[in-house]
Image (tube, rainbow, N blue to C red; front, side):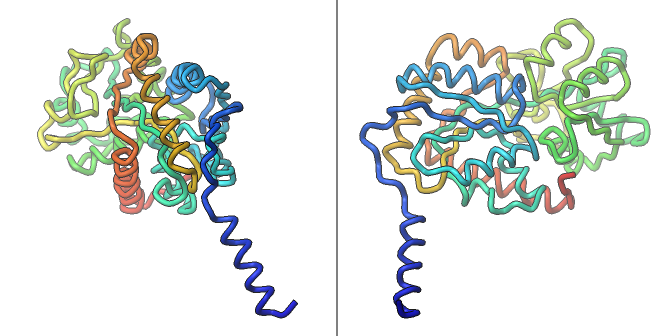
Length: 326
């Protein structure tokens, strides 16, 4: 074979390998694997499992959750990157899909270019919590104290570069705040130490973990990070309404279904329709309320734009703060 024919053959193979998989009119006709980049029991896992039980009924095939924790969700994303774009391997991704790649220098895992949205599910605001013994009633009072004595106050987070840490830094940059940072291995240990008074405050991202502490009076909930109040905590104001300099502030964690790039539109539409129908189920909605989750109510194109905008936002934040994953 001549060099020109060899090059042509290789080029043809590459083109075929990059081409989208044709729509299967029988999709789905076997089980679907859903990757989750976090350990079982966390907020993404808890909400996802409720959704996928219902989606399984809508699609009439099993949906098998595989937890692939590690690297802030990058390990699961890396596995999706290698998956065939046929709709049978999906990723249930949280907002970390926009933060973990820039933190690790993995632009190949950017949700803007590596994957495609198959459906938008929910958003979950974070809750600003302090220990019950603090003589503070509002977020404004807390931030005024921190500004006056930055060395005295300690933020707990679920880890360097985690979403709660990044949101805390975002708020701090807007209000010119400085404080001590104590990273934990997860939301739970930080929450326990806020309740014990070992750290001053945190932005809790897991409603199902935080609500018992709030209801028992072990911690005080000062605000939520969404622009509007949470339906799960209607008496707790938003940062936007209660803090000078944060008008319009609106940040939450969120969850979407991603598929490999090249997945055909018919398959994506079937997945999106099953997701939308699942989110009208009474038991699913009841579980969402317990988790503090609010419906995003975005179609796939709107959701893709939303994910792209969030990716730009948090990539810029990570870069400006010169943050890297450990």
